Length: 426
Image (spheres, one colour):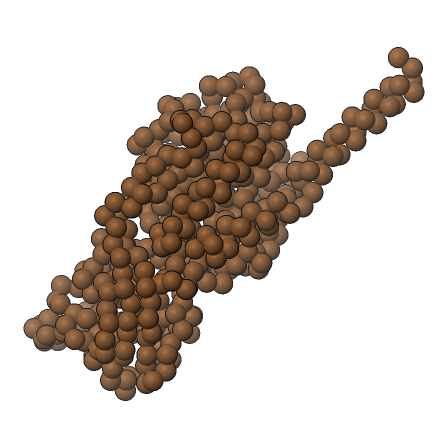
């Protein structure tokens, strides 16, 4: 072979290498389009009003199919049922003839029972309620069915377990009303819980008008979405990449929670890695299973269901990486269970130091706060990775939007995860 031919072959190899890098590591185009899709109004916040979870699951399955991932059963779906209470319809909440803005001025708890009408308000001295038995007895002996009790602080010790029949409980919040959640949505209560901006409900307020309808499902059908890429050297051993796709859904028919950082960002990263390793040029040594879970926001329901009903033996998972809220990164990443699986954590740090992808790869201990937990507690080596940085702080709000998510170090985190998977067990 002549020197000229050798130079041509080298040039072709470099060109192919450049094109491969360009296709998978150049920017955030694919991730942004994926996040935009998952956060669109059509997907209804990816929960249990207007079939948001099903629309999101079908989209993820279509991406799996497009990339040629294999299914572990007849299709990509692992179906299961959950109990869930939702705020299915939302009317007005009126104070002094002012109509408050839902998800800006107030939240209605997903654990609440439907209410419609005008209710008398009774402002409660919190400290007396907690410490004075006579005052407590006075309230408990009173007919409160037509009243809402108003508290200055969120008293979680009785918030969902108030024993007396009451119209509802109102908890006054600072200017920022905080975030919405699914606490006790599987065991709904017999009254309403409302959190309101305290500046909008002065103590001389006598009544409120409120109207909303809740809907309880004893057996709501939902699904995990699971596909895999077969490894070329160890097809029966797996690296697992997981991310929950569900979010908070809708409060009524018009108010929806996009969930860009939590967790369209992690779902996008999972799909991006699937897209990369599905290319035959990048076929991994180990099989990679991609699991996208429903029900995480309700209490890790999808991952718990999978662990109880695995599609292959859990011991075949050599390492699991759970991605949840990876939309920032200016301060690096935090690795839950990094202090437990020290060898694996050290490898992440070594790769990052070599390539200077991220500012820091920080260690954290055990924390049962995302979908890695059911696997970890059942013996699967597991990391939960999330990004760090103050550039974006939206969480469970209607303003966690795709167009505002910075994805500050998304390409660098992608590269770190890619390299880790390629080098796994070497």
